[in-house]
Image 1 (cartoon, rainbow, N blue to C red):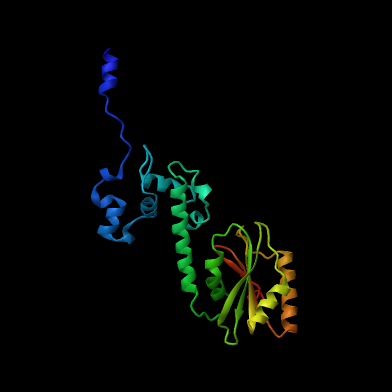
Image 2: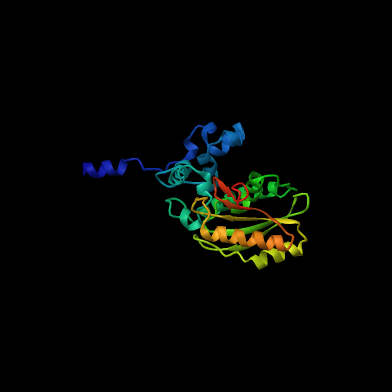
Length: 240
């Protein structure tokens, strides 16, 4: 009987709640009091997901998600809704919220890059195309069209493929350039593996495109192999 009474009067185990924290430590209140820059990545994500689990606060859940990607927001941006839902406390709605927020951040970068851009070096190309290719788990091939002053007229997606490669048809590339009356073009494709070394197919395509460009009086100024942290420039390496 004594054991039954002890069980009956034992305190109910309440879920951990951010509301029990000091006001200046709660993510939403902290943002209002100290500004957005004062919040950690985990606290910002906690605001997105809103609530945690019975044993973990929203901040704890956010920390676990970040830890799983090495606290790298670029790696976090690569996760799909299904990937995020593997974490305890993250349902479909919360996963969609996180993916949407990260996509808005990516589009913001794209908007900044959308202003008139003059290409003067390979770094300019890399920074210009970064919003399109950053965090992609598959290969994509793009062409950048330039006017006579090397100002970007337009960028065009040529193809999208798998992890190992994508197809770039020279006829499609030059057709787009001729339609826009471009003066020169730049080729760009990404390597999701992070390896910037060009493949034999990359080298062969670049040679073919250079020869076709010379014939059409539409020079290929560069071919960039893009990775999230680095790039390879055929022009810089003397291969164009």
